[in-house]
Length: 398
Image 1: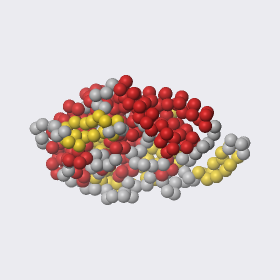
Image 2 (image 1 turned 120 degrees about the vertical axis):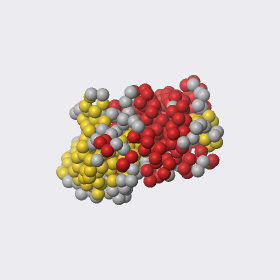
Image 3 (image 1 turned 60 degrees about the horizontal axis):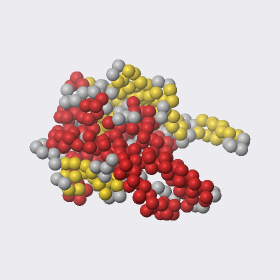
Image 4 (image 1 turned 180 degrees about the vertical axis):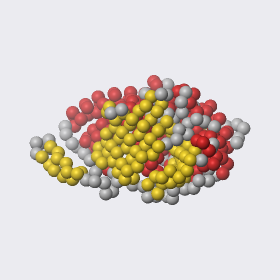
């Protein structure tokens, strides 16, 4: 998978930029706050349909972007006019195994609109077609942070294994949103309680099945990546034996050996225990959005027994295992996005990561505050760009 060109219009702090990218290594260098992460975010959005940073659609639109008059018709038939705050637009041309894809994403009036080759596309469509792996300071901190980051790591993994799982994630997310809305209505005594209870019971049957499918997909993906994970950890740390593993927890109980029937039964049982609390809280307290993933080193929980350097090595190895696994399953590499992670790693881990990246044929986009590591790659495959106050300029082709 190669991203050939990237265009940004009124996105974050970019007014209008078009970048032609090398098929191997692309360095984006600049001080903090100049737009490097915004650029990586743009590529991620085109590949996934959403950002890796907490954001609303309106936050993508550059401040000062041209506004225009809009006229909307309300449900009661009245016309309402107002000024729209502008539009942000991203366009990327991807190439994969001889096929070319023009991907466009626009954000306007609090809504987003995506197309692939001028045909409407969902976020799941993008995730299935345009694989990428993101390395960021947030992902390197996933172990010591809350379980949400670890769930995101695992959901990225199941997309690497089987892109069609994007539909499973999307369907579960929609159902969870519907269920939360219904629970909130019941909690706030909106509508007829008997009707709401009947609707919730009907929705639960769908919800439990989707929750089971997503949970089982996560567990299977974790099991299949174990050997790659251990090998990557040895490579990153120069160890001879990678005594590392992962565990999947449902209500603090290991579920790594469970089949779909055991998962379904556990989710239903947990629902029976927490049904009244869910209604009181007005939100879903049961399901894969509440599960956790445990990273183990020498059989010990890395959250409590590992240094920050060891924790980062574990996550780095997990990311590298994703890349290796993707190559083995699909015979291609995903686009790799490294957002200011080099400064987060000690010298040994940086060197070993660079050796790994230099040895594969994947396209890599790296942001950094200096060029210290650009000479690690072959001169004829390396492009360097300056990012300053939302402006991108190609500095050198060495």
